[in-house]
Image 1: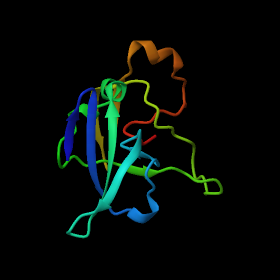
Image 2: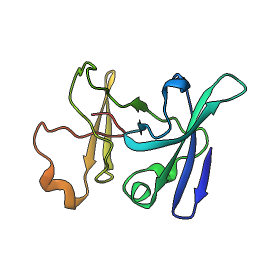
Image 3: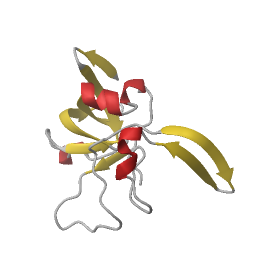
Image 4: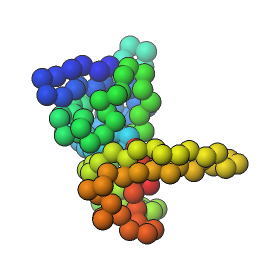
Length: 136
């Protein structure tokens, strides 16, 4: 569910996560956007849910304002000290929204040509890590 707020939105997200282990105040990446759990519960159909709120900056720098009821969201819980790290760190602090310039199917893969906002291009390095919807 998506509910408009004065300067943001409130999102109720269904999940298969163990809702008892998801604390109020926990950070969770929702399609790469670091958001804070403000409410949690269990639907009658045995589907867990949690609620987050997103404000003006997150709406401006992401595609979150386009989400509607039924939008699929990539969810990732925060790592805990001692968890295995099988890659590199990706933070949910969003700097900008890229534009898809070209999309090519290449066998089982898809190659995207993206254009980053001009103000961010000097921070992008060859073989550096960039996350798109939380996936790097």
